[in-house]
Image (tube, rainbow, N blue to C red; front, side, top):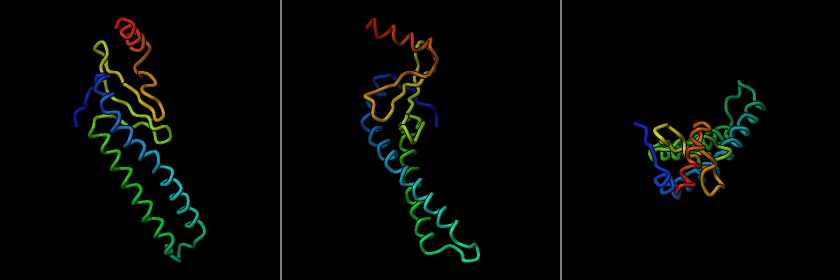
Length: 134
């Protein structure tokens, strides 16, 4: 899939949808982690010769269901053209260009918009200068 570049305005326009998708991911991920931990505990308490118990099989099915949902949301973000960067913080990067250089417009769950641009100080300074000018 070719890389999509966003202007800041285009990234802002997609944020309502991106926020909903990321919210779903951030809610589901701890559930997935808890289920994996529960499965590991059940497996540690069983003997291999017993095979998987009904409870282990049920928890395994739940893990797969939640993982499938999370992967579906990640694919939606990929189709939009942004990059999901973190389950714990809900960080999303949008590829962009500033003064001819590749940058990331960054958005993080709980913020009104970007936490900054990750492409080096030079690009951040350039963006700040553009904001001051207009």
